[in-house]
Image (cartoon, rainbow, N blue to C red):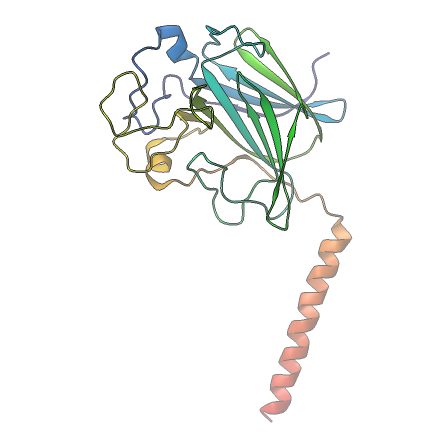
Length: 245
C-alpha cells in the first residue's frame, strides 16, 4: 500500500533554462538536457516519517554514479518551523520575508549532505542523514524528519565535479561548453519547482515556496501568546487614559 500523499506539485516541461535565456552546456546530449528538467515533486507520510519524490524528465548517468544519476544536482529546502534562514544556501535565491528554511537536503552524484539551520545563525552539516534511491525517472528520498505540513523549495543545478561547489554556475562568457546566462549574478539552478512563470523569480532572485506550513506548536501556547499581547495592549491603553485625564 502506497504511503499517503501530503503534497504533489507538477512542474512545466522543458523549462530547465532558468529565466528562459540560460544556454546549457553544448556538450550535453538531448537525454542529458532532459535530466535537468524537473517535472514533479511529491511528499509522502511513510510510517510517520517524511518521504520526498523528485520526478525528472530523464535520469542519465554517464559517470555511473552510485546514486543513479550524474548530470544534475538536486537541492530541497524544507520549512518545518517558524523563522529560519532566508538565504537558500549558495543557489543565488532567497525566500520571501519570514519564510526561512530549517532543513536542506543536497543530492549530488558525489555525495549527499543534510544541513540543519540553527536559530543562533549557524548551520550543522551531516552526511548520510537520509537515503536516496532512483526508480525510473524519479528520485526517492527517505528522511527521518517527522511527516507534517511543511513548505518546500526544490531546484536542479548542473553537476560539475571540477568546481569547488560541485555545480556549474552560469557565466557571461561565450564558451559554448559552459552554462551561460545574460543575467548579472544569475542564480545557479537551471530549473526550480514553480507552477507559474520562472522569469520573474530569476530576475528578482526571490523564490516562493510550495506547500503550506502548519505551525505545530500547541494551540494553547499560541493562545497564551495572544492573551499576553492583548493584556499588554489593555495596560497601555489604561495608562494612556490616566495620563490624558
